[in-house]
Image (tube, rainbow, N blue to C red; front, side, top):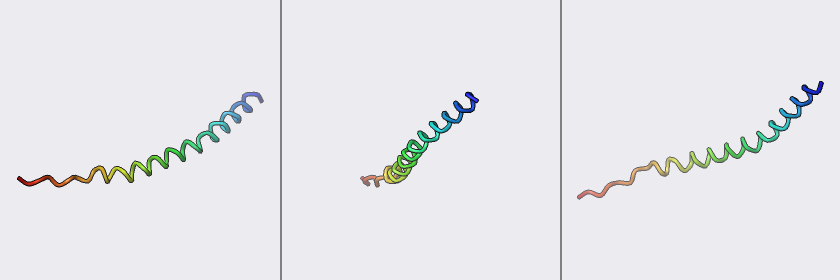
Length: 48
């Protein structure tokens, strides 16, 4: 009984901590994806 209570409490704690960190990771990925193509655009070289 004590082991199952411990496992349930631990999984609940990890699940509640996972939601905000997953959201933060998702937002950072979206921001990085929006910035990456702008940095990858080559600047035209000057012709001599």
